[in-house]
Length: 337
Image 1 (cartoon, rainbow, N blue to C red):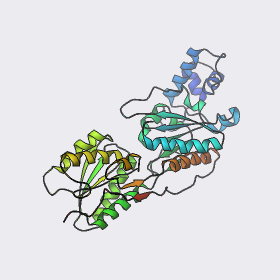
Image 2 (image 1 turned 180 degrees about the horizontal axis):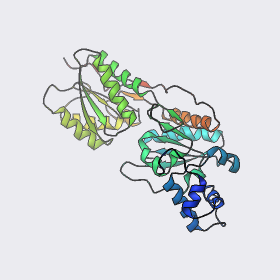
Image 3 (image 1 turned 45 degrees about the horizontal axis):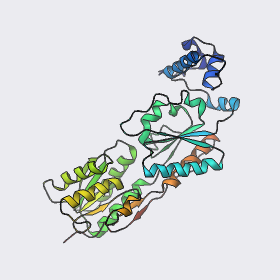
Image 4 (image 1 turned 135 degrees about the horizontal axis):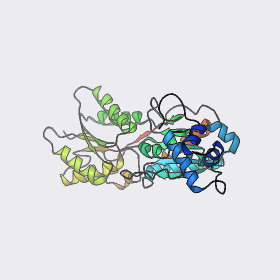
């Protein structure tokens, strides 16, 4: 990557690749086939990557026209929540004559090296979850018009940020459990270093701290049922008074907590109240059904695509977080006397 305040130009790329500026324009504009060799094209792409070259997007769109294609970068396609995000984004995209390409970056699997060769030349913009930031960097998606989902608005890479009101969702959970009389809490936190999970932890601690006599312990686990079960078992059998309420960052974590409670002979909600977050289909498959926070994944995707369309047109995207709703079911009750 180039350092310092001077932004690399197409002339710098041409010099590094040993080709003309016209060749650089052809390659990065996707118009090179039949006009320059594959080896030359790869040399230009490599030089552009090494220099951190960012094309003048506005000038390129005027010259070449838009591809009307958007990239959606998500952690994994197997996640019900992100399937909803895609559905919502695709609905808005279709209304405006855009297509959406999905690029998953499953946890623990490194993304392919620049899978679109010159992604900038093939796409108009990117919508990306902050949980898939590594993939975003790998494909140079941060060099395109970019909307970030679930991302710190004060430190976002993107031209716009769209968030669910996660902090308010956690506040609703805390107030519900406090009103039932719970004072000993365990937070089963997702072991993922991202803004959305830091926000959940901070909001829970802040709301519980307002009520005298509350205690909060935290244990962490990857978002996987067996890992959540093991972490919950260890936390519930640790020395000291057992928590009466378990706040989980995700419904899958809550499913693992159910298995741990059953192994320990604890009844939900009689001995332990459990809450989730997402309102996946899993929430009503559990017995008792899970009290959780409903996140409208499709609306999230719609708002992400609407924000990107606004950025592409030079407008200010809609402001404000998307509201979330606590759904109270059978997994929460007052603590045993």
